[in-house]
Length: 293
Length: 321
Ligand SMILES: Cc1ncc(C[n+]2csc(CCOP(=O)(O)OP(=O)(O)O)c2C)c(N)n1
Image 1: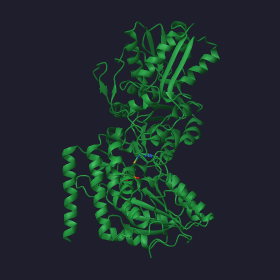
Image 2: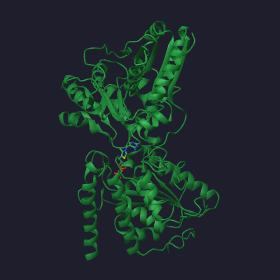
Image 3: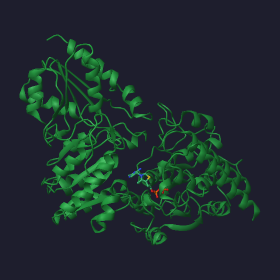
Image 4: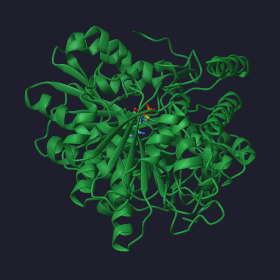
């Protein structure tokens, strides 16, 4: 079926094309992580790279030529520490220039920094960085859409650790209370927080049941499999339906770089030139092995 | 673990916090640590005392509530985290669950001020104002990395709550040779003697104030630097003394909103006690969301960096009496 919205009708990439875009996004992330002297939240960037490509280049109606197009889908990066991954995915979609991101990232007065700011960077839908804020904001946007008879959706991307915040569940309850089928929460279920693996100290399980118990439509997705992501986005219930949907995307923190995967040391960090080459080689090899399948 | 002192040497306050808590855990069998997924400094404590360590995950409000519950039962909980979240997300838990029953909960964290380049969600710039407004709360802001261990030690004896603020806390210059200064919660530290003007600072701006004083000394100015690391209760007697001894000339520089932090605390004392001042300037963060940039760049941009501190101090020295 696909998105009914027309704001991005021209973007109907094939799964193979989306996979190429995701590879490009990861390469660009690693390049930034290797050249910027400060820390980049590379682990949680790599875990949402496929999701952000699937959203910005396939599933969401976006309009880089008119960022206030009322028909656009709204996107809230509630896990704001993955900002640079969103910036680059948006740049690849025509919102910004990648060179501007690389050349100014984290510098004084730059629009591009560790957490996204709507005022500094128009095109970003909400200023985030403090975890647990995105879902209630999304509920407000979705309520407004309902009241105005607008048919777009509101997508909110959260980390699984982030959903420890009580405000997430307050938002979840509000979305269900208001019967907001136009809300789509996406969980980056990489099973890592900042300092521990999930279940080691924080019990997130039974995770899908938690969302189901709040009355949400729960969909399990392989967050690194483009077909799975595309399928989930194609089959979202209509925005006019009465149950919010959560896409629980199974992911790997640091996905694509062997020494970063599932490694708590790579929540945030910076690669030197040498490690950049190693990381790129690792990324290339995962692509090569995938191509061989 | 004792550290050898070299003035100006860089130490990690985080490491010192970790070591101090691990040591105190032996001395105080009712000492607990609680963290909302920011337990990097607590590794040693966690390994030594796994049954007195709680990581609640991304749940700052629960961290403070849990600490209150522990304290109700006679324990001494230290909540460690990032201050933008630990001061604001939890402010009602701190007020009603900790301050109201006056429990000995210690809240310690990093990212006080425009530090770390995380953007405006990640800078605690209103925290001292919020914390100073809470009944029963003691409020501190620490610049010297070695001193934080001493403050934690003293806080163990306190019956009520305390807030302990640090900058990034990864690498700061040592200022006070252990044993040379009276470091007591509630008392300001005269970090440098001087008679022309008093430069008040706390936390990360103390080192900067000392640098400014050195620069001004070359022009023949005698600048006193006071590390007012306890904002509440404020050392009003020291403020009065400094007014008398440095010609009623005050400059305040802080990595916090210019209104609501130390400058406001000092101004309150000045007005309440009817202290006569010749000149007063406050340097701090204006009412803006500061954006990205290095710590130094942001300080300079927002008018409370080293050169602005030197210039303001010169103006105050030159002011007509
Ligand atoms: C309210 C709040 N508390 C703490 C932090 C610091 N922090 C940033 S990322 C992170 C871990 C987040 O884990 P998760 O949501 O699972 O994200 P991911 O593993 O994908 O990076 C923490 C503790 C924050 N940004 N906001």
